[in-house]
Length: 324
Length: 302
Image 1: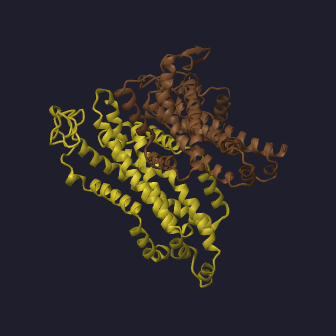
Image 2: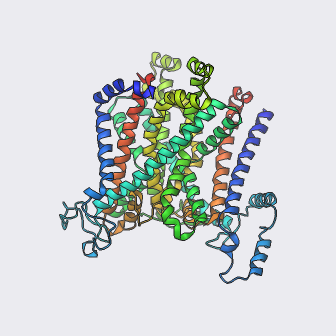
Image 3: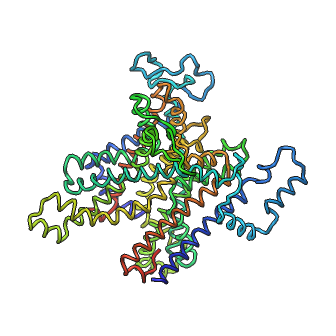
């Protein structure tokens, strides 16, 4: 077990180092940091002084080591565009994105699981056919179009919900939350629904596939033979066993959801990390891009490692094999 | 091309028996052809300054009150014909889509063939690279490529290179699928007797790959390419919508939707809804056709 853990952690560290190298190379090679930081009329001596102060005269491997060292202390440099520490900007935006992702995940589970169960129980029923048709159009509709159509319907035409921003937020220490005000919840509704659609289809299909397999297994047939109520068989006996892989995949998808929130945040002008990143891309603000990449990479690696380790704890057969 | 050439009678018969295949391919074909012929069939030239005037701005579609018969789907805030803008925009979207598919299919197939046939460190490097790319969301990688390109290119030339940057940003994600599939297929083919025979008869590796293995791995490549065309068009639209794709001077469908979205609240819904519907219809028809093709070309699906 200890050997598996060490191996898995070693892999995680390697991936983080690779992502760190990519971020570093980006900061180092794209654009000239000196050029983007000094005044227009700076003298050659001033530029040289800044170069030395930024450590740009050191050998590249040493620069990389320093970059990683600073990153580990939460120092990702200064944004070219805003002239503010990148870490500060990301921390400021973090609550908005995490709250959006959290609500979207809950919504996706709350709608996806029942739909999956129903379509598994009655694969030819009207609901299953309807869901099939909707999901066919759904995979061909980009998120931003869904978002715009929702805005058009609920914000422009019906005027029920706001179309942009987070509404009123409450500061809890450094965390600003929209969960404590009515306008915060109203603002959350459309963006989180848009983001949830991305996962909902996946969850639905997964539940459906698991359920169909489980419903054919012996213990369900025995339960039927004993005459247990249908509802209990489906929702208590079968669903419980179908949920484990669903929760795992949902957990692993959270990294993807954070990245995917870029589009949703742009549509709804949601002041999260995705909006920060897209503005950084538009203005080639490399330190912000690099820090965002490191952050998402870290989330990905941490979630994957967590899932692998959990599985190894639960299922001893996986410990010996070289898990990817 | 033996796998593909031997397939037509069966695939052709399946095609004629499937309304899904016929309708989806017809819709896709009509859209692609009308995009190709945009300069001849579009009622107006949306790029010729002076051909549109602010007097005509924000006219609704022809069937609603205040519509003008000259502008079937209405006009945008500058008085441009929405239908013509869509036709020209679809051209740009499809150009990027087809180019990204062509490049990623060529590169991915080549990498897959070489990785599967040669094995060794090259195989390991290429496949690990594919693993890393596949483990990150397409949109994130495409945005990074686009941001890096923005940093490297001088400000004045960015619009000229927008198409190339988009194609690269999409292709960099999509080659992985071809590479993985072709590699697996190549491993199987390379172990078969006919390849051994070819080798014994003194053919070189390049010739064996090109003449014997390539034709037998092509049908999955065609299926992936069809489905990836839909994905590439979607990716292009998303990047352009986010403001890092095609500029407003050469709008794609995504750019049109972005511009329309900025004026959503003034009630000019047609400027955003029609390009969006066109995009969905295009992607849906290509997706459905790709779905059908996958089943039709897959002998195991029978």
